Length: 71
Image (cartoon, rainbow, N blue to C red; front, side):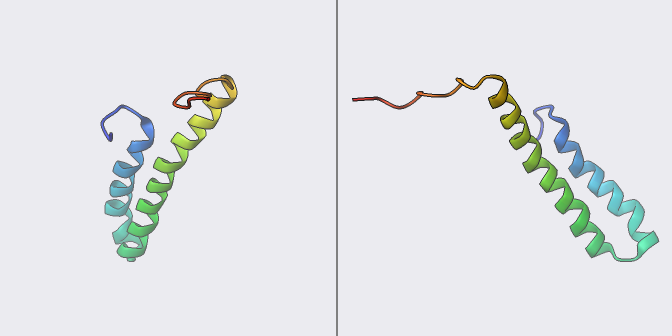
């Protein structure tokens, strides 16, 4: 899933680079790592949710009635 070409996964790489470059400057490697990777995970979770909401607004009938059998 991480190699599916979606840009939100770049946050993980950017978090690693940020920790590597900024930890010597700020001196709080663990706090900086937790903040950077936590932000990246939030981005990974939020972007697909926003994408789903946006797609649902564009096509409101999509997905309704699938998998349900009315008797």
